[in-house]
Image (cartoon, rainbow, N blue to C red; front, top):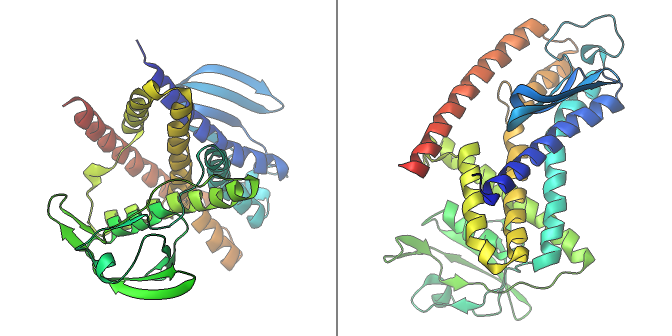
Amino acid sequence: MIGLGIIFAIIIFSFIVFFHELGHFSLAKKNGIDVEEFAIGMGPNLFSKEYKGTRYCIKLFPVGGLCMMGEDEEATDSPTNFNNKSVWARISVIAAGPVFNFILAFVFAVILVAMVGYDKPVISSVEEGYPAYEAGMEEGDVILKMNGKRIHVFREINAYNQFNQGKETEIVFLHEGEEKSVTLTPKMDKERNYYRFGIGGGGNTKANVLTAVQYGVYEVKFWICTTLDSLRMLVTGKIGVDQLSGPVGIVNVVDDTYQQSKSYGLYMVAVQLLNIAILLSANLGVMNLLPLPALDGGRLVFLAIEAVRRKRIPPEKEGYVHLVGITLLMALMVFVMFNDIKRIFF
């Protein structure tokens, strides 16, 4: 029997993908472009209905989706063909998917902040024997910047340290209304095997409408930056490809989160699932903007080249590039799925 946590995972993932494809679909319709098929999921159709020239489908496997506009085909005589539209119209259609993901993440983030408040970058504790204490930092100080990066929420401090273990860091902070700057090198905590500055934060501040919107932006920014930092570590070899997680891993994380939070009531379940939904939506937006074949970012590269040279790269050549990209992407998905299954069951 499928557990409720798994059902929540499928709903969250499917809705995020649906909203991504809705971005492409909405801008295509706005620009008068024919949409052949709008589908959620992959594989054979469970439901299919044609309406005003577009076939709407729900497919068997609730992973992925598509909005077919004939973008890889030769232009026809029809003025509503994707390839007959201006390059800027086509750019807006392709970019709309990731943009809609960021919009969805923001909406979720505003709701979350309104529910639980926001974590200001205020120091609640300073541990003796660690760099922050020795530099004279105190409880109540507000962290403003770390190596030039603006800090808005306390989690950004922890994330920065996680992605820059042992790195000397210039910290700008507010102490009793006065802005100060110190340069700290985190100290190794042998028990945790982790470099630390020796500062802690605690407690959320209740949000009103304006601060919910403001910190909703910061929440999305946090997850976008976290995704980019993770990609940077992947490219530089600091984390391995075997640590990537795909749909199977996501379902497992959502299910585990549900199982751990359900004993605290529906409110806590909603909070935890919102956190995951923000992460997934922001992550999908970033990943789709990567300039790789078959992704929206790869298509945007071709469109940017066309905008500069004022001549389109032949669709069949672009199609070959994207076909290679899809093949490699599917191979990566199989590898990631295998690793997810191995981590979960073995």
